[in-house]
Image (cartoon, rainbow, N blue to C red; front, side, top):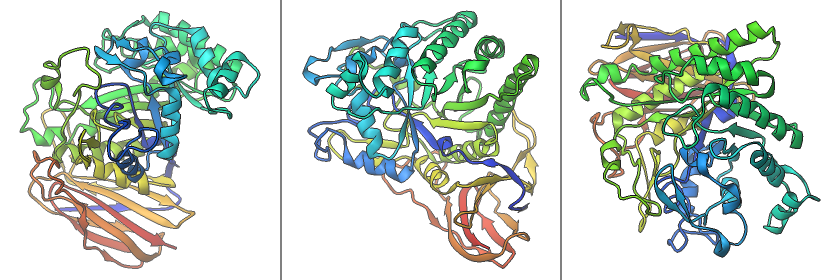
Length: 500
């Protein structure tokens, strides 16, 4: 089987916003407690942060982290997580039916984010709270000094403002599971008025309005239109959430269909872009609303186990999907799909980062282990830099139960002019055949091959609890203006060239 692509430096989709490789931490399960924060653990630093987790997050090179939720957000009082720890209240978390000790709060998150070289994507509670509480949080975080809240921040140890720029206006507000769910009209008005108040405190903010929590919700479409009609002038992004797995009538052996689900992601993105642009046209606006895909991942493995968890624990085992090799292949395709839509998707957050549907897992008495999905995300986040090039790839296609014309060759390329680095990500979705991949680099001159790796050879249902999964060397035949490589069946691949 053959496949090919032609890459041209002037043929660009868009510059890559580094926030496309963001992630997400929520007070849910063991994401925080025994995840990023575990005082007394052998690897904990003086603040109680697990240094082994910090090093794993640094490997992923996550530039932005969404916090504090998620469903947890919609009944969260941010004031509970500031000040002396021995004076912080223990609360019932109604979203996940856990006990929240508030030993990890705003200042702890900001310190931890700094240690992993990430900036915050802060969220405000619009479920049980509203305009004043959101404006107060912005004042506490971003106002220099001289007011009650800014001076309270300084009293609590942060002399300088946190200078948080990216803010989410609630979470999944149309979801019937959400504490304080809203109708589209209710949310649109509240979000717009909250955005106005927040900008009065700090006019440099970038604000994300909630899109529908799922394209499967009956609110989808009408929700987006209603929210943007009201909020268009006062927000910058609309959020999207989407998870994948073997759902409903899916057969868990139906791999061809599972690996085609990135086509669903692409159609979802393009549909929401069309909605945003329809409102723009109707309003005769010159402003473009871009997208924040602030929750995405594979999520289905833990559903049965979660129904058996006893409520009102601190840091229970919830949403602890153990990912297998086929999940890594799909996550690789989803990442490439986000890149191909980088002209409109500017922010994205893999949900989540540690222990909860996450690439990084911790043992409470031991160390850290990396899930299968860790590897494609690490490679794209570290090396998908510069600009995304237009995809001119060609290969045979196949049809699955849900999807038509799925290319066996899934590929995207990025070019960083500053470092003169061309990176090609490629996946062979064929289950038995190799793919002879030709890369036409007529408009480049290859100086040398920097690196080429492949991730393949594992049973599709195998996971990485034993730590044996690893990237392997990929043989490449590189010439001045071309390269050829054989992609193994069911393989994730990356090639990096130094070019002139």
